[in-house]
Structure formats: C-alpha cells, structure tokens
Image (cartoon, rainbow, N blue to C red):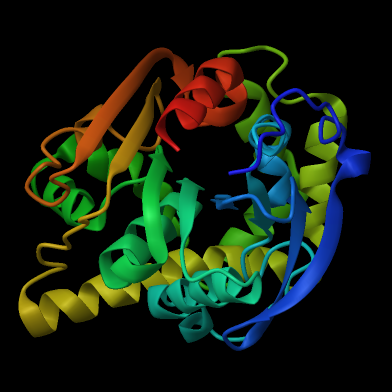
Length: 303
C-alpha cells in the first residue's frame, strides 16, 4: 500500500473522480479516490442510499493510501437499472462486484458493505473466496443467521415487516414516493443517534438519487428477489444452508438498529470461523455516519 497518510489530497469530494464501468452485464457508476497503486477497497452501500453513504470513510481510506471505489449498486442513482425482479438476484449482484474489481485491474480486493451492500458482501465472500482479501460488514445479516432468526424470533419477524410489505406490487413504491419521499426522510431523521449524521443537504441528495427513473422499483426489487430466492431454497433444499465465509471478517453492529435484531450479530462462528465482532451500544443502523470516527478507526486497523 502506498504511503499517503500525510497527504490531505483526498479530503474533499471535489478531489474524488466519477466514472462508469461495465461490470458483468450492467453499467455501474462509481466514485474513486486514493492513489492508483493503492490496494483496492470496494465500498458497497445499502438501501435506500447510493455511493454517498461512504462520504465519511472515503477520505480516511484514501489518505491512508488505499484505492477506494464506491459504486452505485445496480438500479441505484446513476447506475444502470435493468427491468425485472430477477435482475436483482444475489447471483447478479455478486457478479457485479467481481466485474467491478476486475475492471480496476485487480484479482481481489478488501470488500466493505453496509445493509444491502453487506448482504452482497457476505455472498461475494461465500461464493467467490478468490476475490475477497478481507471482509467488513456493517449491520447486515449473514443469510444463514437471518434464516435462523426468522424461524425462531418473533421480534425479528416484526422488525422485518417492511420487507414483507415490499413484496406487494406498486404499493411500496407509492408509499415511499408520497409527500416528497416523507418516509425516506423519516428514516434519516429519526433513527440516527448522532444528530448531525444526516444534514438537510444530505437528505435532499438521497431524495434526488431515489427519484431517478426506475431507481425506486429497482431498490425494492432487491427485497423481492431475495424473498423469492429464500422461498426457492427452502422448497428445494430446506433453506439457505450453511453459507461459509472463510476470509478474515470484521462485523460492526449498531445496537440501536430498528430493523435488525442484535441477535443477528451472535452465533456466527459456525459459518464465519475467522470473525471479530464489534458492537456499538450508542449507534443506529446508519453506523458509518452515526459513529464515523470509531468506524474509520476499526477499518484502518483491520484492513
């Protein structure tokens, strides 16, 4: 890794570059920062966000000498939005990450994911061990653990009610769009512990990204595709099974997550043997902006 720790070249958004790359079968928009010869770090955002969710991490990692790439996942913001629920199956999302890494001239990368980006990151590490050097996941369930909780925890079933609602045609889109994306704004205003985690300007950027044609349905189709996948696996092989992750893994978990139970961060060693878990009692689901300094310190120490 290049020694760029003393430089402040990458501290402002104006110093980051935007681009588009063909990854598997879609064009992905991305933001990149850091020296071109740095070790590659890929940052995968969640719902209902876009690359900007990593605004607190990009400068820290770039200054440390990493080549940092934060894409808009397929369907989001400025990335391509293929039609149909099957376009957002996990196999397609895994292929995107592999293609993205290859497009930057690397065989593998350190992969960091939050929320849906974390679900994708878990799956990449499980399916494509060869492309993940180290894995960091923030408030995103390992699917084997998620299945375990849905089968045994009424609390997690209640917390997942929004995901079941998302299975309904068109109504979820209407409910998110109404009153100038009031539901979206409520997510960002009410849940974080740190008052300045999302400014008014930040929330407007998220609204604009989500309002792009096709973006909202694409984002909800992630949930529809996962539901269909889980049903298919249950009917054909009894469930998701033991999805092993053999790479060194760091799980960061904000305990004030309203959608995901803290129990999803427990008992993972059977699937992830090389695992360290750090829990944040005073942080929400939006961990990387709720506790950015602590998260950045963990990232630098682990990566």
